[in-house]
Length: 458
Image 1 (cartoon, rainbow, N blue to C red):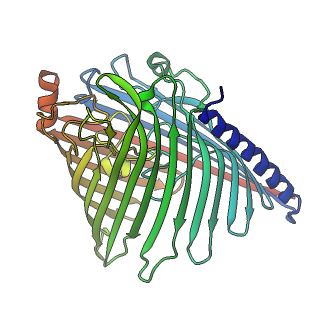
Image 2: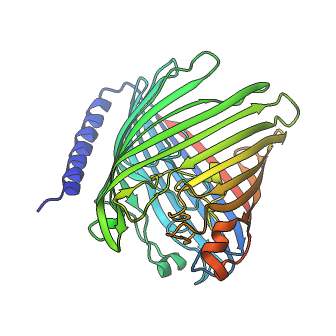
């Protein structure tokens, strides 16, 4: 019997073959006679420490030496492009009580291998790719996280001269491997595989800038996941979103508003029974307003608010927890790595953020956020703590964060350091009881080196 996911995959593969053949034929008409080759690489070494550990089921404290090494090759001739990229993400200094997953370790993985075709303002990519979409809250190439997610499929993008842009894609998400704890801890190598029970298709459009540099973008994403092994993980829903923003400029106000509605079906556990047919109705809102002072250090002060819905009643046939899909969260909620204090799910958070540049090659950030559950009976996502009665309340606590970056040699050598602390509220202290270890403190320091070489030949 052929499943619907197999049918979708077969359609996607046929589309890949068709579009790949079209790109080769069209390239035969290219008039260029020069090939360009660009080689890029980065190496990031980051030491992290977390004490005490706030998650359930791990050691009292944790540390990690996260190593990420990247090498990318970009070849172009006329309208044709071929890109390959390999990333080695591994972690040292951890142990059997550490937080170690495929988000921390994925060794020797070719995260990009695609053929692209360019004509006018359009680009067609076929193969394995990484991608950022909009602000990156639903689709992102991870930057702070040690491992990088990728997709295999078809990706078309277009950009007009007046600032308009469009994008359409059909991707199969790649499953980061290995997932077994011992294999991750040993930095074992295993090539990622496409999640054949999953697909992500989408449309994205960015409108021409309005007077005053006000910008608007809109998107629709169709996500499907139908794992036979666990119906509770299933998903089949649309995400319809829009974002309006104005980037900071000295002496002027800036803002950002992004809203997303999710509708469809989702998996879950009701009455101890895994189900894949729960009515999924979730939403997300990010809003911020700031002012960039025309003063030394270029300070920009922002008031921020985020709400990602949670599941109000775990016993009913509705799932209201927002699904952030393949998005990044470091820029909203602090460092991830072995920390990752907040996720874009079952969260209600108000905060204030200050960014500044004390010197041309220095930049810094200080942030405060209150962290609360949106739904008291849903989990503090990512922590392992949950009170289905709701008696523990909603107050996760108060979060303070700071980071500082020095571009010692622009585009060649950078040093970054930062800290974060959670002053716990009622929820973790009541939900965890005697197992709660106290306020979590996190520190990190990272050294990033980069190189770039290019050349051309007739």
